[in-house]
Image 1: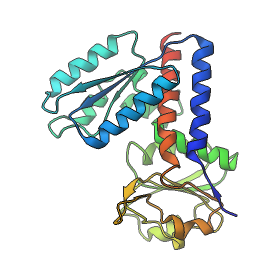
Image 2 (image 1 turned 180 degrees about the vertical axis):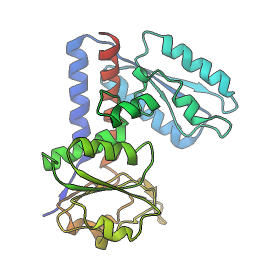
Image 3 (image 1 turned 45 degrees about the vertical axis):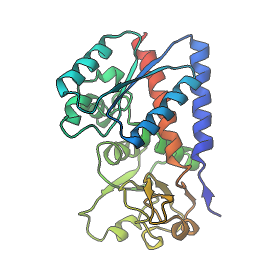
Length: 279
């Protein structure tokens, strides 16, 4: 019997734990989201983050900046936030306008306030097994996997996608859990065959319903990170859910799987950053 992993329900538990810890600790975590331009999707994400943060007791604010702002001006804003003791977490909503170098902006954020976990120092700490702020989506995925499977030691894990935001940090987190990890991507030879060996399959490529039943081992656990619009306009993942789910032990749906965990883990990271900075 396939278990449908309810990310929404699990995320609610994480949010409740964050709210409880903030209340008990007396901390006042501060999160600032920087939104450049007026991309409609980004505006929705930022509103959701802001509402979720306030709900758990995080002092959230959004700084909206015009699309034509110069990179130097944006970096000056970030520098001011780095120095502001009331701000524990800084998140610059991506994507940024084309004239701004995303890497330069991400690496201008203090690693201790980098609640997205994208800074090169946090990435390096994570790879070498040191204490780090970890990207929210992979962190959410690993929490769902551990909840579904318990100990992950010795399992074969395949991650489809090698982005710095999901694929690579996801692979590191799975290694930390003692999995045997393969990172597959667009240049992987016989991709379906590689995926079919996985006890854990994580799809993070951004291609609607790419993963089919013949890509999946009987009894595997499938985590679908993709959020796409199908030809019918409906949200769907990178996994063909109807085709794949009968073969799985457990699977995340889209929507309602990984998505809610990303925001819950952002709140978790903001609290973690506040605890470290207020020591």
